[in-house]
Image (cartoon, rainbow, N blue to C red; front, side, top):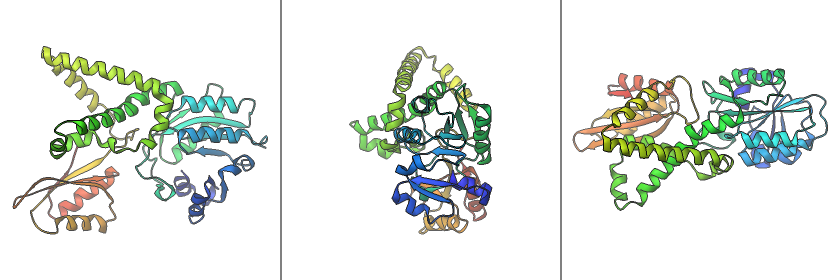
Length: 352
């Protein structure tokens, strides 16, 4: 967020960093921040700020809300928001600790953007562009403060969407948390099977795409699961019921209706915006069976400063060649890579 704001506003914005001493040492080497304080110094250094973003794991966000509540009455109201992936417990914590403090205005937030990289070194000023950014004010939140936060959301290129916290958590359970449970459970199941080694050998693009998020670390999900387990349980039960329906449809030879409904629904999902589960933009590149092909393709990408986030070799046959599958962080990089490779004589195409 700091990088995005500085990129848009330059010196028109002053940003104070609150973090660990280790992270603050790195922050002081960047041209992003105007002030630096440790977490313990939060209560004594809030006066004069306009907006505070809490960008820690969910449980830590709630700890910081309690710390903010220890501050003395501020000379002017400050908007406090967060980027947590669940909203109900965070909102309840803010309501509890900020009661009777009109100078502390809490508005929940959840930008549907992120990456597998962690830490201040992974900052990306374009992270929020075209990403849905959920905002969860309470009915009592004055409009002027909601408008202030929405202006920041739009400024960094995101698309704001106002939602109720309970509705957000229920929807997120279906489109984000359940898919994570499904992917992790499916890969875990395959790993335990008698033919696990053979299955891993035969895993192709479809299985790999479907289970990409199974590479997530549990530490990134622990707080999400803990604060939304009721909705996750409901979605797991609903999916078990859907699998039972699929099984019955196979027996009755009526599976086509489910396939068709799924296809139409999937095709209707907007392609221009990013959601909770980040897209993986990929291309296929046909290659001859010659030494140095990987180096040649990597060099083409590097010379144009295109970051290849993922790579796999498919259909590799001796003396016949095969194809690479390259993954990118953005559609723009994906399209640029295809054009560059085609100009160098490689057949390549975007995987839809």
